[in-house]
Image (cartoon, rainbow, N blue to C red):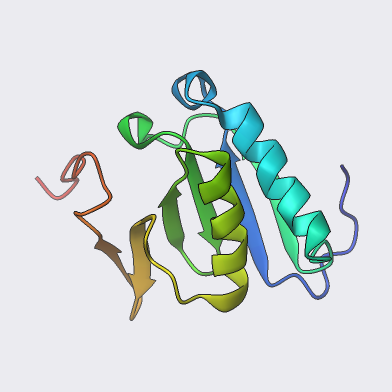
Length: 121
């Protein structure tokens, strides 16, 4: 799908289709997300892009929403569909690994499988 005009876009979902995520259903999750966007008639407001590895393989399948700055753990197609609704409502953090708050990424340890690497050391 080519998108020439991004006017009116409110969210851009980057859906990991790297090898770890693909082994955990990324293809089906990607299709579910795109179907949900179409069913909600949000094609003009939510754009999707398949990516390669987003670096959180243990939390596969990863979906990143921008400009919100939220990183989601989409382990099922149903969760993928919920993420689309969250992009619209921005109220549910049930599957959010990281969220942007006051310009800083905040980890949700209840969802994240790993903390990650401390780049400051």
